[in-house]
Amino acid sequence: MKRLRLGISPCPNDTFAFHGLLARRVPTPGLELEFDLLDVEELNHRFARGEFDAAKCSFHAALRLAESSVVLPAGSAIGFGVGPVLIGRTPGAKIPSDARVLCPGEWTTAHLLYRLFHPDLGRVEQVVFSEILPRLERGEADFGVCIHEARFTFAARGLALVEDLGATWEARTGCPLPLGGVLAQRELGSDTLARLARAIRLSIEYARGHRIEALATMRRHAQEMEDDVLWKHVEIYVNDATIDLGPVGTRALAELARRAGESGLLPRGTAPLEVFVPGPAQAP
Image (tube, rainbow, N blue to C red; front, side):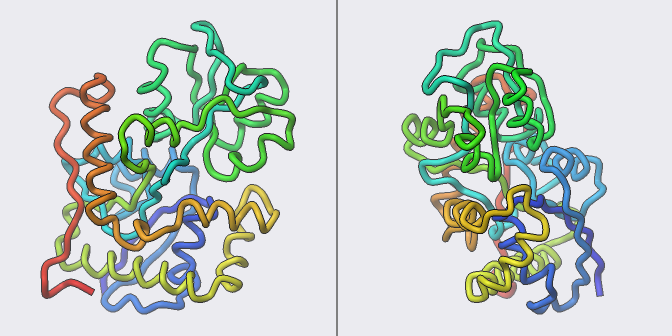
């Protein structure tokens, strides 16, 4: 029995996808899994420090950590025409060069997208994602790049959509937006990686077949408690690419890596990102 420490975020698509494992409803032969639920940027940095065997990390972080880790085929969040949203006070507002812009973490894909599309605009400040809407409401910043449930709740707080960065990405690239996925340490070896990938896939399939049961897990950890908000988040970020990243998701990841590299937003000499593919004997 191999014990693995995993990290995921408390956002609804993660707690939905991992419900089967969190509630011990699916088999994990040969593995004993322990979970921590943390802010996504904390997951990025703690995985980088080797504190987790696997974690749901931003794909921006994954690009930076490609030398020591692989992306598992199950568990990713891929947005089709949607993604992090840039929020302000006026719909479609222009961003002044001196505007104060809040982002949810340096290594988040949300921050990478903002820098790809608005490289010279705004003075960026990194804060925990749950702080962004309250600080915008209090007038402590001009714009904020919001993730998780905030895309469904900003209007109720009197704020406005400036840009859906996921829609911009898809319009410019023709690809869905790879937001985050399950990174695993290469040193685990192919057998353990395959077992973990299969367990995650089974967990997602279990949640899809037991939605009411999974809802209790989502409610336990969510920032927003309205059920319709939780389900909207699941509907846009838990899809077929979550079950298996597949060719479409892999191509989208390659496009993200290419654009980030060409824009100088990745360290020079960054290794290519690898999606782990189980061998024939290891396949589900």
